[in-house]
Image 1 (cartoon, helix red, strand yellow):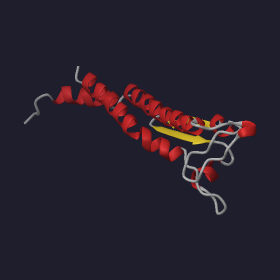
Image 2: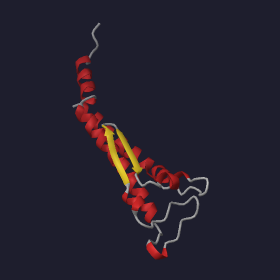
Image 3: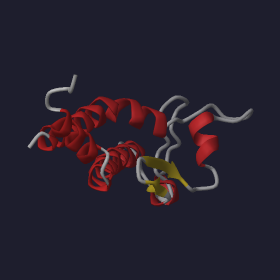
Image 4: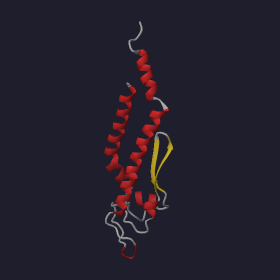
Length: 137
């Protein structure tokens, strides 16, 4: 017994697995990663004073901007079509994020991720919904 609408269903599945779909979803993921990077950047700038009047942040708070290097080294990259990495390439980034034996953590990336995750998920779901709806036509 033949399945009714089988060919239409196959066409829709082909559309959903196309390079165009991967490209659009990758773009949505990149936008989400960049939103996280922007929030981390903002959190480092919030309330800080650079230069001579710099005051270090307290443990558990985002680091206060001093030289601007930590922010300048924040990167959003897409090594694969459906993979996004957000990081700081400053040599001391991990020490600030996780702390050391001599300094308590001043996390900035994980709080940015946690704050932006609901919006990133919502935007990703909306992009996917749009693609799924378009695949039916």
